Length: 232
Image 1 (cartoon, rainbow, N blue to C red):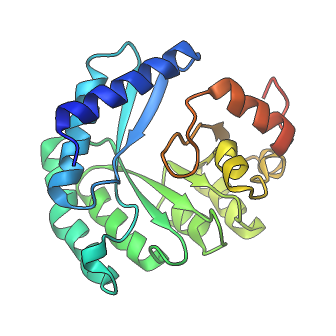
Image 2: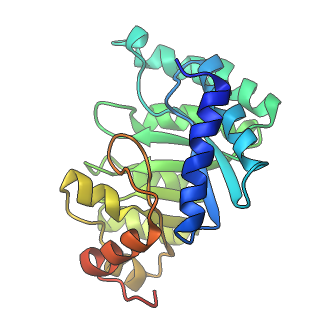
């Protein structure tokens, strides 16, 4: 319901908070509009923020974040809308560097995520994947198969999935504040490092499961909860 200007203003303030806390590069995802026009509105707001704050802003389209109420029981139809209408519209507008999808039980299946991400790749976007956050659904393996630049979360990813990410050259983006907020076991970061999987750490700042812009706090959780050293 917010206007584009209001979205940009609120996001700009959060970006400035990130900067005060030491962050100089932020990825900002859409994914709370869940219609073509609402997703485009979010991405335009992100673009407005990118030119008005002294940070590097990386925009990502996450239309496959949840199934909108009007598509309840018709997830495949929503996936087709994304692949045939929304992804091409986002690409034509040049508003997103990456496309992401939420591969999880009760949200989108691996096949549904593949449909959206293959459409995005054909449209010229890089790929990311919310993978294996709650259950091991094969998300890590899908990210590897698609040669996604990264797989996010990975709290429940199994050994086979992690090894596939190593072979694919993908990055594991771990979000310890989300595990903290949801009271879930942390992602096996130490095992990932031992396997040779590159690990990145991010806040996952969002209104549902990790409302923090503080990377210092997240670094502390990564050390205490995931077995990484301060240097790492």
